[in-house]
Length: 82
Image (cartoon, rainbow, N blue to C red; front, side):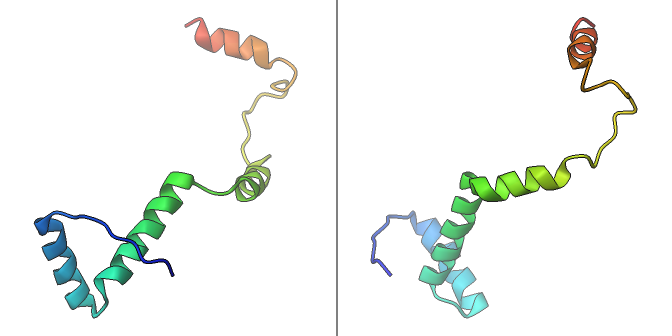
């Protein structure tokens, strides 16, 4: 692990101390968990995971229109002209 130093407000420290005590964990552990969560939501899935998810969803939905792939420009024009 790499040691780092951050500055927090007194209120943040007090809340974090209470949470750590209630969960019998260290403040550092809670901060690492928060950073992991933040990075995961900001970074999103990596490209391979996103590609796999896109492939998995392909073909799962039906438009009810048999020529959608051939006439998609026509359908888009109809929608956007309204």
